[in-house]
Image (tube, rainbow over all chains, first blue to last red; front, side):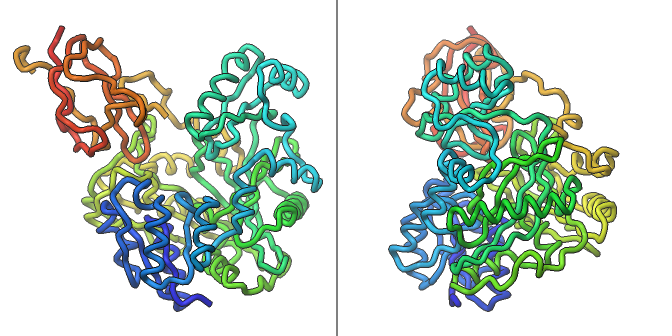
Length: 457
Length: 84
């Protein structure tokens, strides 16, 4: 086992990893930017190293400075958290070169997960259902028109290098395709340095279901059940739960087996997630493998009782997995709300500032993963996720009740947050019945207006 | 906001001030640039979200008070525009 782990991240996930290290009696090293000097992860770790200025490209994305910090502190492994360098092949390679264990998948895994076209090809060959799509990148509008005519509209034009909802255009007909296809190529080139685009069929009213996977270095793979991640805004997940109200045990087994087969096909190791789209008729399609721990991992932890971060560390250290899905005793229901410092009434504009009044919810069935504290000043440089509030109960109904109580108790003043929005969702009959698709959240939002302050993302 | 002092453009919230759409591109405006009402004159990035800073009126940029890629505070003065 490792003796010291450097945590190459900030915010709640850095805290989450540091706490796991403490549970395993492993020393931890926090890295931080100049803007994060007063952050909780810096205070909680055993050692701290400043790795650069506030701007992420010079600190949390600075591979050389992070490797240097690991060597100076004698860390034998690095946990990358999510985002930042978590899925950067180059970073995993640099760790390896310097004799530091990267807690995550192999560089080959990261490379493949990042290349959605190749990943899909492999999945098709492995017999996993995929969304009908162009056989590879589409070069010309002439080819695009032909492909879309064959698969039928609506279609999605996707930048090969995109992700997290970025670089996607939906075309309802050929006219829109003619307009958006060249734009997608230009945007792909400027945003991701890659103008390859591919086209796939757009599934209406889909649900987003993903399976947590753990794999050791000896070829043992287990899935840990699904997460329901359908409730999103602009492809950013807002509310997740486990299990999904849309799955029967039969479908769960079928999708779980497909997920295991998917990671087996790419010799995947460590923790990962296989994302599927599920249509109204119970047909599912492979979307992608996320080669990192995910923001929403706690809902799986609560329903399985398995600490996914300590599992990541254990597997990276070369230990055997030691169980499969059937060995787990999955029970109850967990719901996570991503609390963002954003104003849902004003087009989710960010709401920076200093927390003058803070009260954290607690009590039976409540888990709060956050880096906030009274007096903390939110840096303007990083994203707006300020807390993950997770509720647990034996029934879904119970988990909703606990979530509502916890949301009502949570005070982060004077910031604007997504808490009021989630309170409305917890009271909504459709949500209570488990009836929603990826467009669900729209009904709670005021019509987007063309204001002076429209964001330009 | 008297005419002799010009029109002030202040930050709607704290953020990072950008004078250009991308590092390799030219600035939106310079001192002396004639601008139209609602023309984009800068960007403000707050917690990974970009907002456009637009000119409140037709006129001319007479002063730029913030350096490119530096943080501004809520309500900080960024531009002074002479009404045209």
